[in-house]
Image (cartoon, rainbow, N blue to C red; front, side):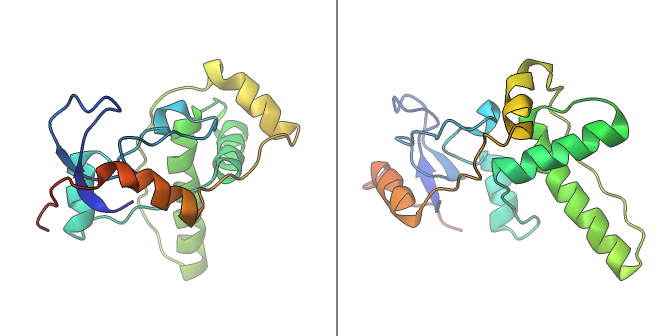
Length: 154
C-alpha cells in the first residue's frame, strides 16, 4: 500500500501514524502467518523505506513455508510462519552471494518457534496451502478507508 497517515487499528482509536498501509479497514486473508495479518508496516520501518535505507520484499506463504522446512531440516528447529518470510529472504540472499562468489553476513529477525503452527506445516506438506497474493482490485478497495486522511511529507 501507499505511504500515508493511517490509524493503527480498525476502530480508528489510535493517533494517525505515518506508514505504508493497506488501510485500517483491511480484512486479511486466512493465511498461516497471523502476526503478518496487519494492515500496515511499522512507522519506523516505513520511514527506513522512505529514506532508502532498506527495501521490503514479499513472499507468499508457499515460499515462506518452503524456507521454514529448509531451515527445520538444516538447523533442527521449526520456525514460526512469520519468521519463515525472513528466512526466505536470507536463503535468497545466500544463494545470490554464492552465485556471485561473495561472502556475506546475513542477519534475520527470529520471531519465535513454530510449535503452535504445526497444523500450517502439515497443510503445507500435504499440498493444501495456496500462494495467495492480494489482487490490485482488492488493494484498491482496501485503501479506500484512508480517503480524506492527511498525507505525510516524504
